[in-house]
Length: 264
Image (cartoon, rainbow, N blue to C red):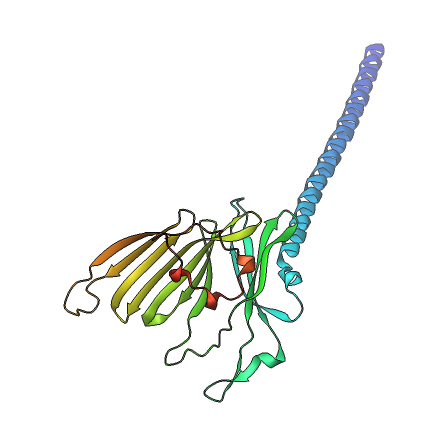
């Protein structure tokens, strides 16, 4: 019996030793797995942080639009929108000269800033912007003398990947130029004007420079306050001429679009 007890005791000791070894191996394996998972997690976190940092750098690059403003000018207005149909927001900068001799006294003996304004169009790229077109002095100042009425108000808009230069003139109506990017410049492809006298519509002119057609809608009852508005359209074929480039327009105030020659 003593011999059997010794054998049983030895077997129990061996079993306990084997169990301890197995637990140590399992513990080491678990530790290794945890360490590997932690390293993998750190790699993922590091990758995400790096991507985040890169995005921050990209945003920072795109925000340095002032790098494109020439010396002697300041940023007057910024407009964003897709102008070349690549799905990215491009940037239109309206700039203004800062010449000291541009400050003069107006008719009310008040010193105003008559420095002219210009335009810079920037196309968005992966690492920032590139200049698409520039014209530093094509717009008059925002402080022009409008005579008995205020001067026309200039605004820039982007619609359907086209650039619109809009002039609002209160009760007298508005006029608008439409440009599209092609042949490494912004070409004038359309024009529209609406004339009014207070609440009375006088007429509307619409020109498509691509087709060379001018539509002249005249309110034949414009002088009859009691009659309803009645528009009669006249279609005019224009002589074929090269499209005007935004970069080559010296002064928008001097454009006489509605006096273009016709084939008549």
